Length: 338
Image (tube, rainbow, N blue to C red):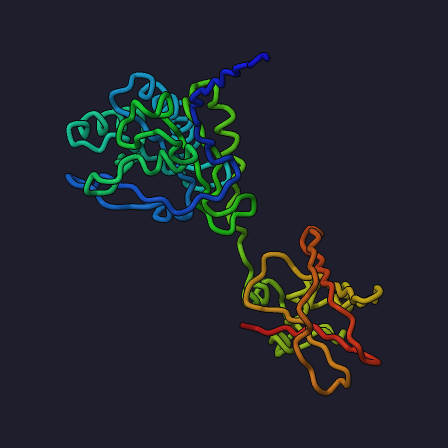
């Protein structure tokens, strides 16, 4: 009889964090910002309306200092150049850029080093990756690097291997036409000068929220006949009142400049309703209502789906609704001025 013994080799595998990917929407993270001789608790949302560059650096680490300097020379300095004129401190679309250096060492004996380094490299503010009481260190670094892997002692930076110097760039502009609020534009460990061009391009790609046009502003852009500028007036006599002309993006002084009416099509067990609306307007809401007798109107059944197609100054809205089990169904688009 032969007996075979199998040796089982068990190895300890290092578990690495998976950093939050570019395009992810960050939660509102907290940290401390130096204010005079003390620290104030702050958060990402304190920078609403701006582009925020956050550099987390271990002050005693030469490589960390090198990476933080590269962020200063490759991101901060180019946007703060006097040659940019009215765009100084802003991206190419005029969005203000804020920068902050956060020390991953909250001990007070590093304050002087952090302050000097931040000033020398162009950071607008400096603070701590901790709270104002110098507690809960490195929560921000841990969040963006993807968490704390098994075996990592968050209070011991030597356990973090080389991930002690991370730059994160966030869009803090609400309703940006290009990016979500708190969207991560960059999240990089060990930033170097070779990354500068790409970083600048990513920041310049962020666009501001569109300027919204109100009905009053739209009114003022036309010379209406006397008494014909009100929302329910029909200045060009085409049967379409001014509020509808405003909503659909048609011309209030040119009769039938474009048909803004509803388009209705039955497809099996669904109705497809489409209409055009002007882009970037405010102060008016649209709701689809339905009736089977043209007397009693009710909100339409919950849409099965909605698609929006960009048409330039206008957009086409298509709404799919379930067909109703009745001989006839009428639909209307109800506009309400806020």
